[in-house]
Length: 67
Image 1 (cartoon, rainbow, N blue to C red):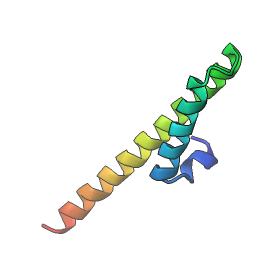
Image 2 (image 1 turned 90 degrees about the vertical axis):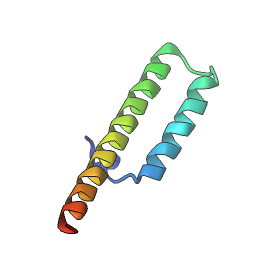
Image 3 (image 1 turned 180 degrees about the horizontal axis):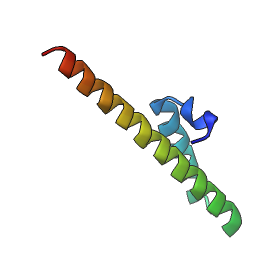
């Protein structure tokens, strides 16, 4: 994953995804541009999944330390 994606917060990633969807739904882009937007969206979704996985692992560790 690229450095810029790692630095995003979950809120920023979701906000960018929302803006990306609006842009794609506008119908103002060529097929090539739409494919580029789609690729960016996939990277943002992967970023969100990785952040969620990290949070879940931290929760497991915290729960284990509390026992």
